[in-house]
Each structure stands twice: as structure tokens, then as C-alpha cells.
Image (cartoon, rainbow, N blue to C red):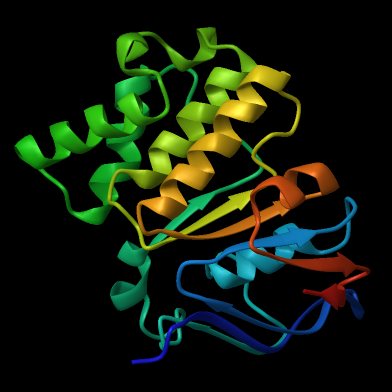
Length: 218
């Protein structure tokens, strides 16, 4: 079996005839922490959204775990955990309710669901705050809760899109440590950022993206 987790072939997205992602070709192997570094507007988030089938490519293809995620979504989706740059949590729900909302989408029920919720909140250091409303959390805590919502089903591939934007250094370091820990526990990781020091600190391989293209990789 191939150890290639993700492969994109000439992946392209255009808006009004302007390519925001331009013929992107990347391969990510099992066990990597792959960093995608680039300035705001480089096309990183659009790339992640196409990989996760949130945005339809204009041209090209995505292959996840050897399958087409748009045509074989049920076979791929449970292996994927996506932490978007924009917070996906609901302020008027308690912490555990947010995790339940997302984790239950993957078919977990009953005691398995309860355990997954507690395990996820414990992993990001929020178990003792599980009954508090998300709207009362600090920026760093909201980012951590955002992560908890994506890991309850124990995905093989974790995609972090700018997870440290706008948070304090302590929360930033906590998140980076947890990403490395997730990788040691067996998850392959894609990490996007515009902070060079972050990708250098945690990534095993880095690609630099600008104007929709990979301009360096190594």
C-alpha cells in the first residue's frame, strides 16, 4: 500500500478568471508534518478547502488515501480532521456541546461519543471547563476548542489552517506542542501559516506558497 496520504495534480482554483491556486502539485507522506508557508492571500486556505471538498476545484485533482474525496466522500471523510482558520465553534453552546455537535457527525453515539468528547477536551486542556459557554472563553481557549471539535473521531490526517492567528504566546506554544504530540501518536499533519518560526519549529518538510503557486519545497 502506498504511503502517500495526499496527492494533488495540477490543482487549480479561479475566481473571475484569476487563479488563486495555480496548478498545484504536492505529495504528502504518512507520518509527516507538512508545512505550507506563505503570506496572506497566497492561496493556502483555498487549497485546504479544496482538499477537504469544501471548495470545488476549477481544474486538477485531489487524491486522499488513494481515493477521490468528492466521489468517495464516505470512505475518506472519517479519516480527515480539519481545523479551519475561521472559528467553527458556537458561542451559545457549552464546550462539550460544541465537541458533541461535530464528533457526532462521524457516527459516534452513546458512551463512545461521551468518551470521545471528554478525551478531546482533556487533550486540549479544557475538560474542567466543559460546562462553560464558548462565548466566555478567551481567544486562545476558543482556538483550542476549535481543535477539540476536529479530533474526536481520531482522524489519520489533521489539517491545521493558521491555528495560532490572534492568540497569546502561551496558547500558541500549547497548540504547537499538541500538534507535535498528535504526530507522535500517529497522525499525519498539514500545517499552514505565515509565520516562518512556527513551521520551522514543528514541520518535517516545508513548501513555500505565493500567488497560488509553490515556489520552493524541501
